[in-house]
Length: 233
Image 1 (tube, rainbow, N blue to C red):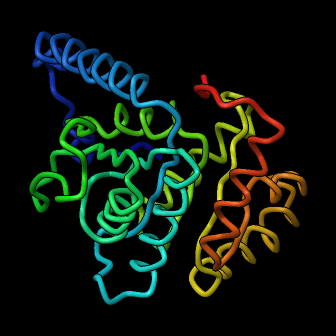
Image 2 (tube, rainbow, N blue to C red; image 1 turned 180 degrees about the horizontal axis):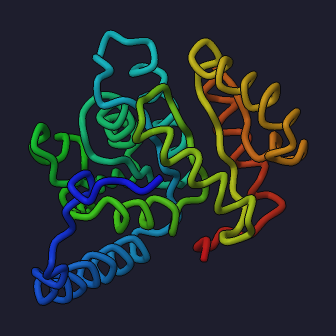
């Protein structure tokens, strides 16, 4: 049975409209990569910390993020966040408290203005493109610590797992902080993905779940007693 032509989607006759603008955007993208690579290489080994921008200072995870970041910097690592409020602010605040490098990878968004006050101005990098920013979170990170968050946090978590699983980057520690928040997801991964065969049983070992900042820091430090500290790709 053929469909009526009147029901068909009307596609543009000239799909090349905006072609020149698209080509010029490549140079903007290149600029973001060049600036990010240059600055982060000079900053040195860091740990990326993720979590909700909506967490308030009286949230228990805000406090845990701040404590975790302080402990990380006391071990000589810098801290990378998205530079925003909530968990990101807490992590940058903790890095500053530990007198460590406090890095903010800001992104232009309609509802967010600039990076939080605890990002060191020398370590601030601003992005227009999410995908360029995401590369920077991974490139020089020696570990991910993932606090409760939304879609963006999940995006970073699963992308890192995918890159490690497929051997596109060097393995590094990935830690979920907050069993109350993450246990449902972890149980689903075990009970659905592993059982269905969509991932291997060993893939569940690519990340850790804890509630203790000290344990998270120890996992990272113990890993680098056996592995070299270096960029991931």
